[in-house]
Amino acid sequence: MTKIEWTATKGWMLAIITIALFISAAIGLVIVIDILSDEPVGSILVVEEVYFVSEETTSGSMDLYIHVFVTNDGDEHCQSEIRAFAVDVETNLAMDETGHTVGTIDEQTTSESMLLMTLPSDGRYRVELLIFKDGKITVKGTGTVNLYLAGSGGKDYRTDQEDPAAGASKESAADVPFPHIGAVAIAVIAVALVVKRRWRR
Image (cartoon, rainbow, N blue to C red; front, side, top):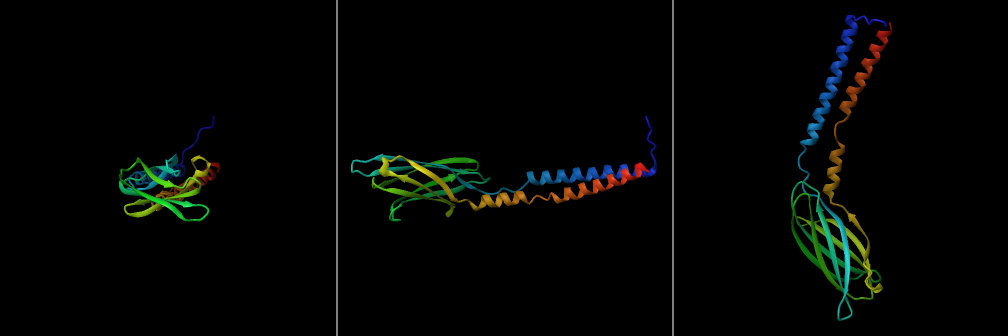
């Protein structure tokens, strides 16, 4: 087995590599601490699920019950309200509307609300939901119901407008300063190549 002869140059190179690795680890630790200590993102409302349930009335119309599940994915509570409009698909006229005050939605909790509208039983309707957060429209969504088919229920509910706070939270998470770690990694590789060349000599 060949014995490695340590020279001053090799010692200095090893020291430089050790220091570079230490700096890289320190920067990584600082970044992790910075991520963990981020300021709260506020409240973020998300419509998790919407269910439509119909019930025939004695007058031949239909009662449409709308069950809405709203989650606050943020770090702060907020006040919320829901407005719903049933728009006839053929005429584009709103046939009924209703509202419900949800009240306070605590952070990281889901709130269930039920709204009721009475509609002619021979129509197909687009149900539009407006979710308010602290008095401002934040989330919009739509779904369809066909009461002519014995109130077979709703389908294809989708969120058309998300809470802007959700997008801002994603952008801030993407702005983590990883280029610093990349620079240190390049320095380490460069030093390693120099050491390899000198070692071969």
